[in-house]
Length: 92
Image (cartoon, rainbow, N blue to C red; front, top):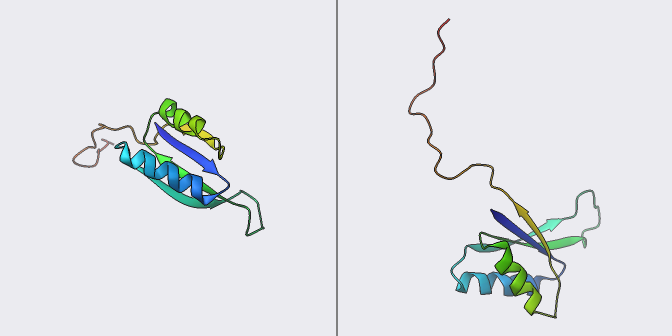
């Protein structure tokens, strides 16, 4: 599962990435504009991580400085799937 956490400020997002990285998880932060917004200031800082949702919730809950919105999504490609060696041919 992939976890995304959206913050309005950069500092809490960077802090969460640093904490998750030190804990051994893959984590990064990107800036995203709200869908349909023309305002250049309407940007959120989104943390992407492979950490379990429960651990991310716990880390966010420990900090009173900020609140983050957590989204969980399943990856588009399931790990361990085998790809064919050659194209599949259909008999006509």
